[in-house]
Length: 348
Image (cartoon, rainbow, N blue to C red; front, side, top):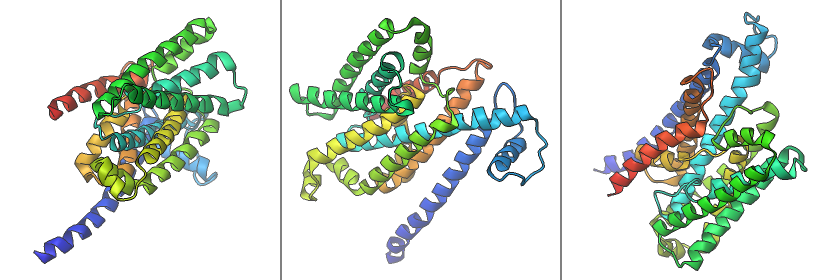
C-alpha cells in the first residue's frame, strides 16, 4: 500500500513531461501539415527543407521552386503560427475564467469579452485609423475587451446576480449589446472596407504576416506565465470563495486581475484573428478529462491542445471548400455548438 502511495506521484511526475513532449510533437506536426496542405500542395519534406533553409541559410541545396518557398514561408507558416497562438491564448483565458467564476460554461466569447475586443478593433479599422501604427488595433481591442468585462461585472452587481449561471447570462446580454454597437460602426463606416471587416468578424487568419506575429507572441507568453504563476490560486478559487479566503487570497482583487489579464489576452488575439468562439469553452473540459483538475497541469495542457485544435480548424477552413476560405469562426462555431449541447446534457 505504501509503495502505491509513493509511486503514484512519481508516475504523475513522469507522465506529465511525456504528455507535454507528445503534445509539442503533435503541434509541430500539425503546423507542418497545415503548411503543406492548400490549393497548391507542398510535400512535407519540401516544407521542412524550406523552413530549415530560411532558419539556417546554406544548410541544404534547394530542390524547390521560388513559388513554393514563397507559399510556405510568406503565406502559410505565419498563418499556422498565428492559429496556434490564438488557440492557445483563448484556451488559457477560458480555463482561467472557468476557475474564478466556478462555471464550466465560462468562455471569453460567452462573457462578452470577445465582442468588446471586436468593437475596439472595428473602431480602429473603420474610424480612428492606425494613429499608433500596428499597435492601434491591439490596444483598442484590449480597451474594448476590458470595457466589456467591466460592464459585465457592473451588470451582475447591479442585478445582484451573484450566481455563476447569472454571470454567463449577463455576459450574453452584454455581448448582444456590444455587437449591436459594433454593427452600427460597420453601418456608418466606409462601405468599401465593410466587406473585409465583416469577413474578419467571422474569424480569419488569412492576413497573418511575420511583422505582426511579435505582438500576439509577447502577450501570449506574458499572460500565460502570469496565469501559471497563479495556478495555486486558481485551484483554490475552483473550490469556493470561502476556502480561497481562508488561504489568504484577496478574492475580489484576484478575480478582477484574472478578468483584466484575460481581457488583454483576448483583445490581442481578436485583433489579429477576429471573433473565434467556443475554443475557451471546449478545450479546458477536454484537458481536464486528460490531466485532472490541477491548474499547474491544466493551463499548459490547455495551451497545447488549444493550439493544435485551432491549427486543424484552420486546415478544415482552407480545404473543405478549396480554393475558397471558410471563416474559421464558422468551423469552431459548428464544433463548439455541438459540444455546448453535449456539455449541457452532461451537466443535466
